[in-house]
Amino acid sequence: MSPSASASIADTPGGIAPGALTGREPRVPAERLVAELVPPPRFDAVRFSTYVPDPARPSQAEAVRALAAFAAGLGGGATAVGGRRPWWRRAPKEPAGPRGVYLDGGFGVGKTHLLASLWHATEAAPELKGFCTFVELTNLVGALGFQQTVRTLGDHRLLCIDEFELDDPGDTVLVSSLLGKLVDSGVALAATSNTLPGKLGEGRFAAADFLREIQGLADRFRPLRIDGEDYRHRGLPAAPAPLTDEAVGRAAHTVPGATLDAFPDLLGHLARVHPSRYGALTDGVRTVCLTGVRPVADEATALRLVVLADRLYDREIPVLASGVPFDRLFGDDMLAGGYRKKYFRAISRLTALARDARSDVEKRDSTDDSAAVGGSGGTLPPQE
Image 1: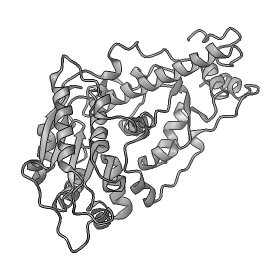
Image 2: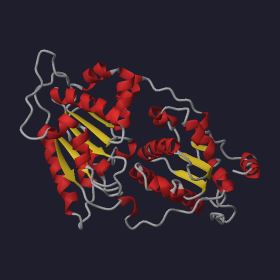
Image 3: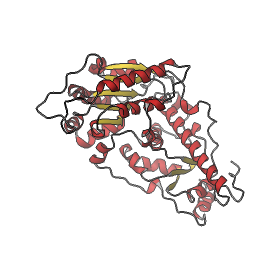
């Protein structure tokens, strides 16, 4: 952002002074990590009945039927007393067949929707079923220690793991060992994953990679293939053009709970905050406003941005930005590299959040001609 643009934003009269993500230093206690093992806000209300299968992709409807049957098979059970299994009783005998399911498909086909629906459909108290990303699970192990994590999750009926990180061999071994202990305790598992480095193709199926990387647990999982295109772009308009720096700044001063950051400053701040805290970084934020968005130069920064995009998307926080469009965040070399699938997911999610932000701005302008963003005529300013 140019000095003149910074000055014009800083001098915006009236309105609400926005906060800044770069001014936040969240601290997340281990108890919060455990309490947050539930589907994120975006998936609070999803159910199998709200998943809309593509008629041209019969595997989607079949996955819904299979997962609903899987949830019904877990049942409430009579092994728990007061919601927890007594120490003197053995874990229930594992039923015949796989005790886990793996949702196998490209990004944007609704795997997280289905995974969260499975969590909701399983008849158990929330504290007896868990939902987290792979990164959140490894963070929990880091906070509690391996043995305490086994004890904490060992009486769960179900553990859902989204975005299993096949591209991190060390963490994969750690989590595979953990899952082995949990399966021995009678915990049912469900997972999705990303694609291994070097395995290209945004819609590529990864079941073989997943089953190989989890080693001795492979026979515990039944792969469910889900074909389809990224639903976030089915019949939707292209990503909205970025606003000007001044328009983003004015918007930040009119939305309660908005934050305003220069994109390069935010990237620097993300390097100083552990990714396990990116969710807490956005606590209470209603809209993220960014100025001077530009292509990301290095892999480490890009991967941190992917995690932030996931947390913003999970929490349904719109993103209003100036600079380059989000589909130009990552260079051609990154989009052709080993983490290609992650970058396309981030682009897809940020684009969806940008649409949400522009829709919010236009609604405010249509109902309040004096809104600062659109100027006196209530329309968005010309794009640069």
